[in-house]
Image (tube, rainbow, N blue to C red; front, side, top):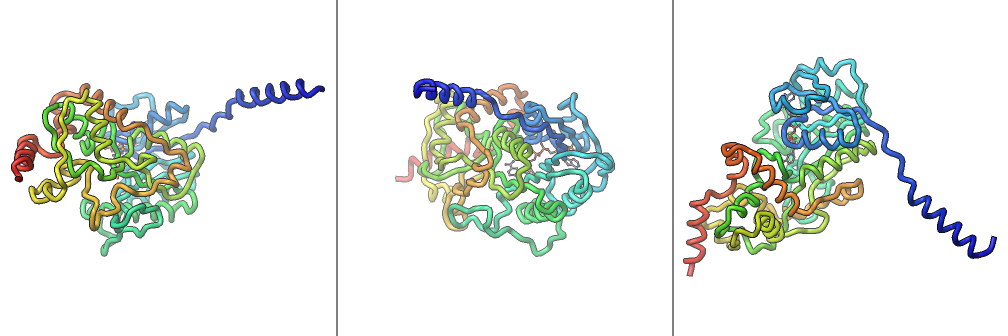
Length: 360
Ligand SMILES: NC(=O)c1ccc[n+]([C@@H]2O[C@H](COP(=O)([O-])OP(=O)(O)OC[C@H]3O[C@@H](n4cnc5c(N)ncnc54)[C@H](OP(=O)(O)O)[C@@H]3O)[C@@H](O)[C@H]2O)c1
């Protein structure tokens, strides 16, 4: 074989190698404890799209009309898990656990009959967010009374205890994932939806700070796609789940949301100290935004390296904002108002803007 033939042969071999697709992942049997609220349906759709078999377990109360073609088991996480007995799944996804006693119940029952337990926790598990670049090893929130089941008062501490309950029941077989603010179509909380919706209404829009505040979030569909990867690869460990990959500022997000609605709004950035004096609160009045100082100095900068190395990717926020507007357009007026009219009320926004201009 001369040199030319050798090179051509090598190139042909490389081309063939490149053309051979990787083997498809083994099809999994997945049980979802819940699955019909906000993130559940996105996870279900992502699993089904990849050819996995999904069973839902819930009380049959929330969006019971969803997924008529899937197996549905009914019961109650709090004491009525009979429908799960004697069954086998590869992975359990638990997006509906808030109380360690209840997570312990399902994790202990399923431990002998599943390989992998994926618990949806929260970045609220961290005790402090007062320093930047927090990673998964940061200290966790605690409560003086670990038997308390007051989820509103002890959300983060209870989520941390839920993670531990799952890990105790299935040592070395648990993925505890800690999302930040979950956004996208179907979000019932409106905590991000405010921005694309408000900006699409046009006029002058109040925006918080000088625009440079770092913010983080995760589109529920990106979360779902990554959860499918974790299931396919049987990945275990603890993961912050928020992004995007690179730091993004409030201004970049607001600009993208404005662009999604056709740049109808004129945005006026109002100094954080001025907003505080006016009683305008971050997160509630100004969704997504927190004034990153003092106790909250690390907000918007949490590390996501572990999640990125296991396959988490992020769509552009412009796409999320466009999809949210398209979803809102499908809702009846009263439902749309409920999920979109979060954040500062319009008349108060006008007053704050007027005061900002009159400040002298
Ligand atoms: N939204 C955010 O920004 C954010 C941020 C960080 C973390 N998280 C976490 O993400 C998760 C979001 O969950 P989701 O509500 O969207 O999940 P989901 O799985 O879509 O909806 C909740 C499901 O749980 C079922 N359920 C509720 N109580 C039940 C019970 N006692 N027994 C059996 N089933 C029950 C509901 O159905 P039935 O009512 O029919 O029973 C529903 O199917 C939560 O764990 C939350 O802590 C959220």
